[in-house]
Image 1 (tube, rainbow, N blue to C red):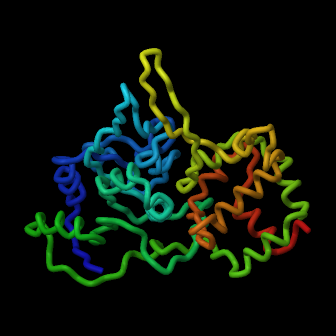
Image 2: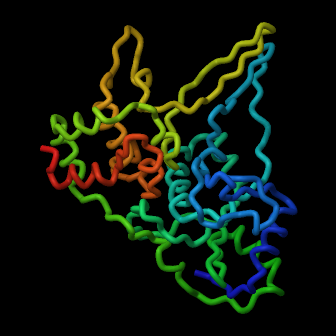
Image 3: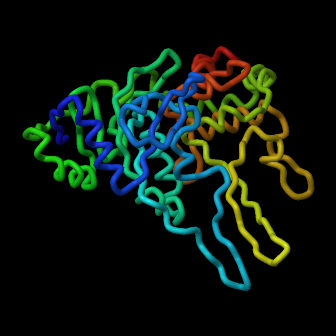
Length: 320
C-alpha cells in the first residue's frame, strides 16, 4: 500500500487543505471527559483515534432523517449532501462504516452521503474494553495517519496527496501499522450458527436478560446498529414528511405488530435477537459479523452486560 513519510506538522497542513472545500468532523474529548464527533478546523482540536460516544453512523444515518416531503402532489427529496470529511477515525469505526456500506448499498440517501464523505483514519491504542477481532482485509479509508507516516487507500486519497507532493518524499509500499487489522479479541467460531440455534432454551439468555433493563443504550452507541422506524409527519397545510427515525430492538414495541402480537415480548428474547443480529447477521449479510469490538456497548450498559462475555459463555457451554 502506498505510504509516505510526513513531517511533524503535516497533519495540520492536511486538515487546512481538506477544510478548504468540505466540513471536517473528528473525535474530540471535551472537558467533561466525553469524546464526541465534533466540527473541527484544526488538527490540534482533535483527539485522533479516540472512540466517540456516538459513532460515525450519525453522519450517514441521522437519528431523525427526512426521506421525502410531499406538497401539493409533488415529492421533494432532501437537498444533496455537502462534502465532508471524518478525520482521525479509529480502525474499528472504519470497519463499522464498511458494514453499513454493505447494509445500505441500495439506499440512495445513504450512498449520496457516503460518496460525499472522505475518511481519514488514524492508528489507535486499544483500550482495556476493546476486543476487535482479527481481520483479513484493511478497513475502507481514503487516507490513514500514523506517527510519521500517511497511507493512501483510494483514488481520492491519491489525488489529495498528489496536490501535496512538495511536502512529501518518495512513496514506499508498506503495510498499514500493526493493530489496524485488529487482534485484541477473537474471531467467532466457525460453527457459531449451530451453537446459536442449539441455545434456544439456554438459561444464559434468561439470566442475562433478567439483568437487562431494555434501555437500548448498547444499540444507540453501536457503530453498526441501524434499526429504524418510518414516521409520517403531517402538517395542517397538507405537507407530509416521511422521517426515518432510529429505533431499537431492545424496545418492547420494536417487534409489536398489528393485532397486538409481539414476536419478542421478553427481554431475554430481545437480547438473543440482538446477539444474532450482531454476530450472525440477517438476509444477504447472513454470516457477516457486524460487531467491530469497539467495546462501546459494554461501557454504555448500566448493568455491565458485555457481548464478548456472552459470546464466550455461549461458546463454552457455560450457560447450559
